[in-house]
Length: 134
Image (cartoon, rainbow, N blue to C red):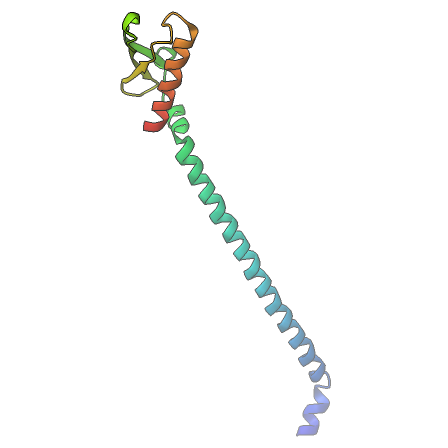
């Protein structure tokens, strides 16, 4: 019966060699797949981290874009209490920027309320406060 079996399948040793080679290739492919998957995971984690950092820093812009705001509500000076120039008092300005509550900003006495620097100072401080609080 052994002779019959050997004579019946003469290519068995060669098929075993080809099978072993194919098996090794499958294992190498699996290892390469795992390595590539690990790289993709690291890139995904890094991208997720960066997106979260961007959301923390610039999320207020996204929220703002979802609101309907007319031009009259972008920047609004609510009240100005002028300081006394002779005593070097600060000018106190209450202002709303976008959807914020009222911010009180103290303008140094050396900034003339009639100069362009006055409104630049107020707008800059209001935006800074808005970013800190929203």
